[in-house]
Image (tube, rainbow, N blue to C red; front, side, top):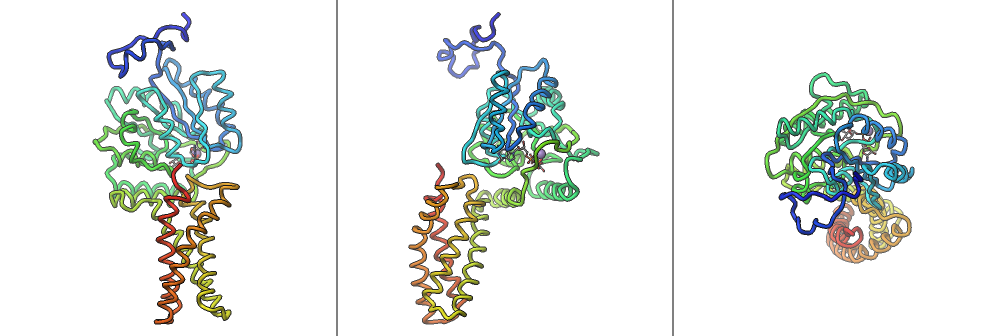
Length: 387
Ligand code: GDD
Ligand code: MN
């Protein structure tokens, strides 16, 4: 029988049975979708797909790679594989970065009712997948976490510093948040797609902590089970976990604790703003000592702060909407233009205060705060608006 040409059998569960009538497709729909985020993983694609074939023999599966426009042509490699193997496909995302966002996009585009998320770099033990799938069924679980920390797991894949940091972050999450797993930061888990579909609007797209986010964002209590595995060392390429990812992790915890009032983006904006304030005050002090008149010194100080804020916000706060190349320049022009209103208001008001009360630091801060509030509003709505 030609699989691609046989008629799909409709079931009463299909949401639009009448619309499906004419569709022809493969008779066996996948029972497991595997979502694999990639960023510069070209050398790991073929070994991983080969391992999936080996370990998933007898299971109908599909693999969805979600690539954030890697510089090393990872997506080309994925396409090459998918031309030979229909189970494999790739999503290429442009101008976006973020492990969590990539996973969510992959999960939302999957077709099986059960989805596994795993790294591309072979650090996760793919031979756990069949057992995880069995557990989903036998335990009627919503989510299975592959854990590095259940009893005596080996985590050879992490340096000592990362091991200590990872354990600290794990304990923090377990103390502060209602999670029921020994490894809430695992990047390797299996979940019913409908759980993620329901939570998707509330999930953060940035950072690595998608599992923790799913666990704490779900409106219903989840039936969670665990399976231990040994985290393997990386063979090709390098880890993308950096200081920003760690900062975002703590940001997510604070966001969860404040019921979403204080978002990671807002915290990052404040951190960048404080650096801008330091730049502003040092420049102001320096220029005043140099004998410049206050309004002029204040203007230059604000401009330096704007430049510092723009660059840092572009790299950190709005890294998912980052402006590159020509758009970086037009963004700076836009940002400066919008901020110049803030500069005029800031300079005017702080000079007014300075004439009454000549204390350079107080007036410096007043000017910067007025500028910062204006910056935040226009940045989110205009310069880095969601596209
Ligand atoms: N699409 C996309 N976009 N993929 C990304 C991005 C991104 O911005 N950043 C990383 N990835 C992919 C990598 O290519 C890899 O397949 C996987 O996500 C994990 O990234 P690594 O850089 O290898 O992470 P790690 O090994 O340091 O971190 C491991 O431990 C963390 C907890 O300590 C991973 O298992 C993480 O998932 C886990 O949260
Ligand atoms: Mn890794």
